[in-house]
Amino acid sequence: MSDAEPTVCVEIAVENDPRVLPAINCIVRQTSRRPDRILLAASPRTASNLVDAAKVASGDVPLIIVRTSGGVIPARIAAQKLIHEDITVFLDSDEFAPDGWLAAIIQPIKDGAAFSGGPTRPSRPPKKAIERYTDLIEKSIYDGLAGTDLSYLPLGNSAWRTEVVASLGFDPRILAEDHDLIARTLAAGYRGVFEPAAWVYHDAARETTNYQWLRKRYQYLVQMAMSLIKNGEMRRRIDEKRNPVRHPLRYIDAAMKPLAFVNAAIRWHRVSTPAERASYRRGPPRSPDAR
Image (cartoon, rainbow, N blue to C red; front, top):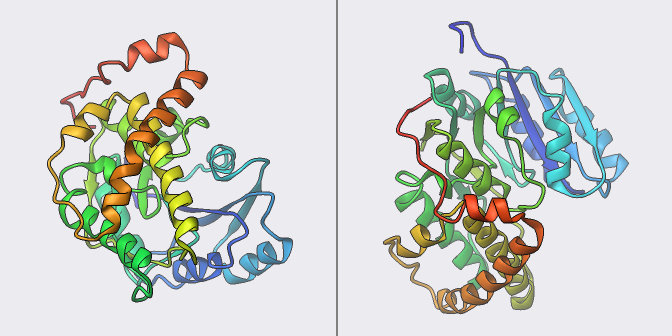
């Protein structure tokens, strides 16, 4: 990247989520660094009046809107073809940032990293046990894991050299697109940075019943396991030493993981080729070269 100030596009993927409006507002109100453009990757379910409100919320920052069939990942794939700025920043529709966030999240890229990611903080105190458990999981990731294993970082609240995302792309078969992209980026020898100063509030969806939480959590575990299998990282993740979250729901979580792994293995076998399965059986090589 040249010594000139890089151009920045903030991409927000949305699926009919009104929380996208505070997310856009926080971007526009950044004082130390504003983006050159905002790109809204909207699924077909996103209402037209919400899109119109997003145009108003963006103010004088140019806003481009991409609509495509399918869910969030097809929208991201379509959107990436339209990003020509030097840096792509991903913010989720349920996140909003304090002033100074954008400058903090792109600084590691300006210093030579391929990508950077920051932590999240709950937007409000938890009201139920399942909310408390979710908050504890996120806290354990940012306090004890993300600093040493960047594959724990989510795509939301991350910044990337656009050329890296363009070259590696998103795999539409893997809904855990954040882990898959980061795993492939690190395997290709690129360098990432965890930047604690680049934090955002996470207004996470709060499931109203235990069944809703179980369903959502199980689907997350399946998708994450698919990415771990694809990238040859399952054994490393199983052997990893980590402090368990001290909450009763962790036992339910642990009970779901073996079933999620079997489900993920079957799904990956159905959508992958024999050559792919063979190439990732031992895990992709980790290049020592930082780029």
